[in-house]
Image (cartoon, rainbow, N blue to C red):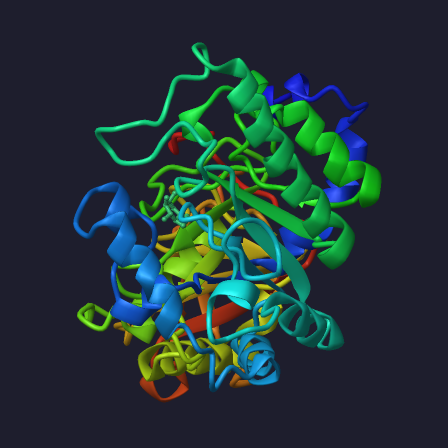
Length: 430
Ligand code: GLC
């Protein structure tokens, strides 16, 4: 199936070339999202707090004075990201408030805050040194820019139709920043945001794609460019049925906010994060898990804890996650599953402490071996209800003793005699 996002792009993209380009992303499964900006000073919501008039724009912008980044340690950030198991990281180069994290535009952390330095270059360097792909979040919206139409939720500066020249001016500036990021940071992945305020024509989506791809032909572009991206980005809300897109990424906060807020203590637990992650992977998606560092550059300890627990779990179970493909369609097993690329190893995920009784339906293959991933024990299985003269496979029952179970999610590897083959019928005689 050719998606509109591929069909509408004006570059010559073939399904094969897109698949090649997307391969690292498909294998990566986990990315870390970072929302860092002046909003961490007062702990108000990123950009939206002034847009929605919870704080005046003037007071919001005053936060520049308190943004010091005194304890910012990009090497330590990158190390923690590595430890989490993530293969890429996306940082806010500029949010809707227009404050750039490098020296660019009317407001930026180099010129306007006591931090006084480009915060992106050392972070991207630290990621690259660890073989982690680099991502640039860039807000198309710039609610602080004098030539940007939108400002507060109920008051705009002007309408594009009324002042096309002024919009052109903004466009020139906006494309200029995209060019700067392209040339200076050469991100592997672009994460646009805010496309909903204007059409593809108004944003010049095709030109944006061209700027990016002419500098780096293999750069990946997320789906928030009014139809000109490479993959879809469901936000916060988890899909219940398998999305149709070949590539997708769930972006999700670790508490209820993208940026740091002192008042938000509604942390997701490592168990919740790991089960959501596993579910996304079994549906063919990635998880882009967000952290919001404090104004001084320290990462809240709860987020450090989540990343470390996730990392320890990934270290133990990585073979069932990274580089795998989506697992069984619904109906065969009550839980998430993945497959090795050659479809000869089936991984079953058992969230939480389980009863230890696993049942699998419709598996035609012979199972050579069952192993508890990361723990090493071999398990027996029993085939129940196989009628000798019928092609319908029996049910596979596996008992998983408590002592081999993981505290978060236990994983079983079923080594199959050959490529996975499933019975999808209605039972009975055929
Ligand atoms: C939303 C918000 C924004 C946040 C983003 C992350 O689109 O506008 O604040 O950065 O989601 O996905």
